[in-house]
Length: 426
Image 1 (tube, one colour):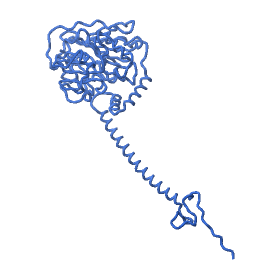
Image 2 (cartoon, rainbow, N blue to C red):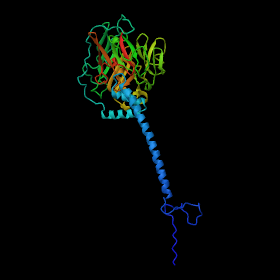
Image 3 (cartoon, rainbow, N blue to C red):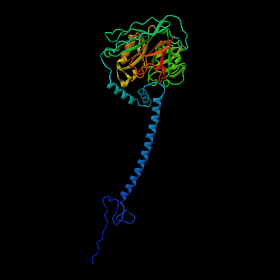
Image 4 (cartoon, one colour):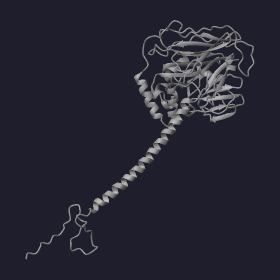
């Protein structure tokens, strides 16, 4: 009788190194019966199940975090978009993004916007030099907190020497837009900013220190808080308002301080370009610590960058377009909307604003207007708010200095998130 052959199970490639020979002692290795699950497959199934559960839990955590972030972002951005004021949607979104560490996003978008729509070169302004003469001949009421003073005004300024040649008819000629006590208190002029961007106009506002009182109005965000002046020009003050301008950069980017009514929001920096308002309502532009110091006669100080014009000369570093010194402008674009303010030898204030201006061309226009010390203010179309006011039949009518400014003419009659300057009849 033939013996039945003995069959010995051999380990498969999957089992190599795990199964032992039949001679292995009991408990000395892993042996499986024919048809039983392979050990590695059983372990792999368990591991995949654990990973799946871990992924599911992680996904839920990530999803929950994303939902929370989206809800918080929507709530935060929604508050910014619905806050009081007339800031444009684009300006509100940009400010919100910068407040939430997204400067690089805003800079890149502004960069693209600039290169897609660079300023035009050549040509002439449509319609030539605007005619903005006064429509009234009466004197304005005195500023809030001030009484009407007798006396004469400051001698009128000479025409502004246009940076572009040859000059257009009436270019650089001052036009009176407001009277106080029958004397010219506010005048306006227009010039082209340079010989290249000749289809654009920079507007200038000249203000007589003997007839005008300066006030610094706080913004609800910059500097925030409660102050004697409101964050708008209220109806009761409008009969005496003559002009209004934007302030400087946001305080976090101004490289300077903010002081008013005995309170310091950000410490003042020595050497900073400073718009200084005294207790009597007169104002000057100064190198803080050199031309002006803190004392009982100081009512308010708003600092922004360094002096652009000093001793009647334009700061030579303007050619560098140094964002560290002169501020980031539309992603570093060279010719954009800019504004500035300065003081002349006679003590008159001159405000300048216009599109397609470099740092140097802003300084050149201030210099051409007779400014001996001048400073840059805010930039970009959404934040430039040069305004003059006329008064007809008991009504105060606001006028934008330039049609290319985005804010509406009555912008300063509404709540402002940023601080601004207003000038009233003395």
